[in-house]
Length: 393
Image (cartoon, rainbow, N blue to C red; front, side, top):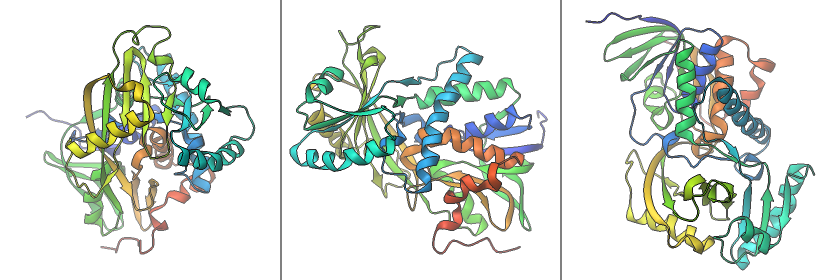
């Protein structure tokens, strides 16, 4: 039987964008790190649309808004750093975004939302109201437009490619990766000392729990209510084919389109259009395609952009988002329990917030967080009513 190490500086559970970012930043700082990911079907990272546009989102109230803006900028900085290191693609590109009102009632909502977004942008010129004719010029598949805003700095990123590039860069720096199953966390009084897998016991100075929708299974053994559940999202990949797959002037130059019904359309080069997504709270871990889900996404996509009607339905992806009680991530330590760091609950914002969340959690593990961890304070587990530190053992 092959021998292996059984002790590390840090162990990261979960190989999605958040866990891989944690591992990457740890090994970049020289920490001997093990990344464990059992490859669950339905990982959210593999199905995400990849919209990076926190400025126009209403999901980030109060202090979370500043965090989201910094996180969005960090995705671009990280993609650039990876590009300088190797030729592995991440799919990152600043493509712009259109916020579109596709009906009269949405036009009224748009009129109310427009000054709020422009104020949030701070007059930097990144956001501007555009005429319907310009919106259709930017995204030729659009139907009637009752109001439109163009956000110049919005970007898209391919979650699969970004995670793959991060992991490859981390492995070049010495990351150890394993696909085994973590059976339980090892608790010794008031600290987590490692993990127990089907292959044996692995010890570490710190453990990061970034298992996405599956994180709650570990927390229950600690007597902590993690307040995370899977939310199924179905997302459709369409193919417009010729003549939209040209290197110049094709769909790669079209902006993202976001409407007022929590759906979106993300164009990619080569005629590929991603339309999504359902938000099926209460789905459990059933990572399956459903007729109702496909109909919902198609109906909304064609309502906003009827010019997509003749596109081929090329692929359907399903992801299980880790949804917290308030829709915001759960980040940082568990009070009263040393050496365990939480990084989960990102919901539909994992590809925007995940890389930056991973960096900050790595900083915590390395003991170099800024402002005594104040940036993570809004995302503490203790913000939930009834949350409590685990009982001593």
